[in-house]
Length: 292
Image: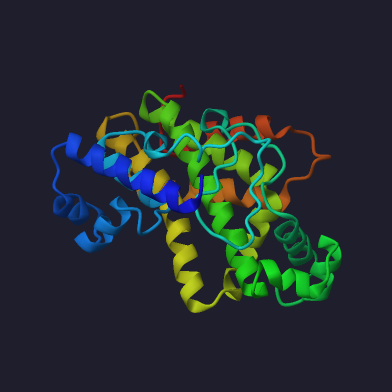
């Protein structure tokens, strides 16, 4: 299925779900804080929709975000995506298996760029060295990506798409506020361990993006923080959490999960799963919740 076909099917799913809820296009656009013209373009497949925007639509319409995806978009891990610089939804795992991490779905060029940027930093990563790692010529490199900036943007885009998709799948497993916070913390911690090179670049190279690209990536990162903030707020509203500093607690929890990419070592005394379980308990202590 082509990206255009995916966009058309996703748009049709959104339109059907909206009509099923009895919402007008204008009302849904108002709740999403976008123009009716933008939402119309999404529903007709003329504009692709990001994972975070799709999740927001699902939340308003009362449907799981993955119910809005065509079956072909949720691909099994053995079918990696050769991106060639094209952006879009990169869901290379079954959403119900959000705890499982196989090899990254990065194509050989992005994998080489990631490795070189981790080693030398964005500005120190030479296109010639990236080409050598990818086992191709420098002109061959430019056939897939127009610039090193595009490579960095694609790395960060796909990283956030995967993290947000896994996070939403984890939240959807929870049946109460404590479970949802614990599952989200578990997911974020596992992601930043198993995808720690991507997490490292996300933490260190935002400064290397152009202003336009930085704003777009920052929106996706802010969405990840919003997910945690919302779970904490929901827990307080339900009487499940007792913290009087919900926003600060939510931010501290996210920082705790993200920072694991900076210090985790395979040779350490704990497995990723043990660390994730510990962090879930720490998070529940922060919001003063009973442990599920």
